[in-house]
Length: 328
Image (cartoon, rainbow, N blue to C red; front, side, top):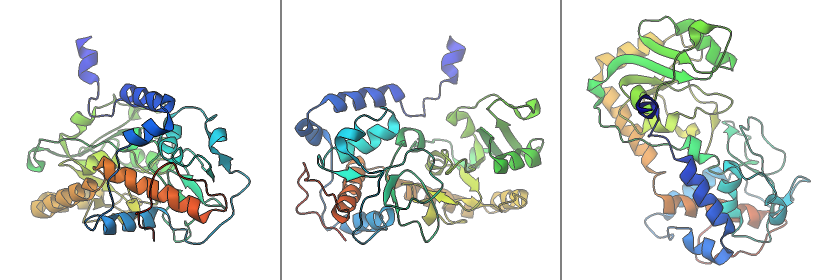
């Protein structure tokens, strides 16, 4: 029992607490839910940041007609009560007459009609993909890392499932490399690749942590960038509420080539340039900080939803007062 408890990853968000709060909110009347939803008022200090992020998440700027997959709020309530549902419902329920389109899961394509999604490709034509912070209990994990970068192992670590070809390619290239502690945690035919899981705390003992996109984004990127370790990854191809498209290699993370061929070179560079490594850690933490004010996050999300409904042909009356909010 003690061994089991030592393997529990206390850095991860509590699903029990998440579902308890979500079901309690689901049963609460609208007026109580509105009072419980902490929102930051829009003022001179935060208006520019709010506008900038809303414009990033909601790039569609002209009126549109909803597609045939649009649903009403009552229809949406019939959806399976999972994390995606709760993360969208907490905001969309503020607009009881709303109709909208949504697509849950790891979204890699671009919908024809403006649609609420968790992820989208980082391309110029992704305007119909309207980002919200969905499945955030899995993706938005932050850590309090007390180990200085200089005191960490000069090695690279990674644990995860390797279903995708690009992850298999990394495993093939570096599974036996002496400077890498990597392992596949899903069952596979190649048992040499399979390793025991590691907690986040255990991975934080390493100076370099690999962050490889899966079906869309890499779920470990947020907690790596909130730590004193360096995220190592190719340039991202997908983005979420975390705005991965704004991340810059050499500024927020250690960028490696898509074929991973320069991994050792990049590790050697930052080991011999500790000041630059420290700057990346500091920049990454500063970037993560913008997502850590829950009241502000709620305000931004509600503004994204409200803009969507204002531009759609089926806007519903709001249950929340947004009269003095500024939209762009």
